[in-house]
Length: 147
Picture (tube, rainbow, N blue to C red):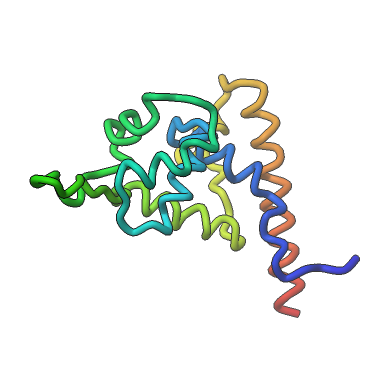
């Protein structure tokens, strides 16, 4: 079977589920953070530009800010708008997502991944099985590359 070098979205669903579970985010919140990642600084209008594509939630900005995903870069002064940026926590999560997309393994230990605890939801169990499959696939790919 032909392998494509840009085939790193194969496990996007698994990776996004892992990060949503780990950080208590919704898909819309994760999508918003990923959109804002490339916007070094933004105002409420830029946030709203992307937010219009998502399911309606008037509290999304406030929740992301209160939960520490968005921080104020410059407070409003006179007619100048407040400017925001993604927090250190959000930037690190985005970098971690890209590392996982590029082949870094998702942790499978109980101490590092709550999806591997005993009393988890059915979906967590299904996704943790896929994480194991993804890890095996990644290791095979890495091994083939080194040959």
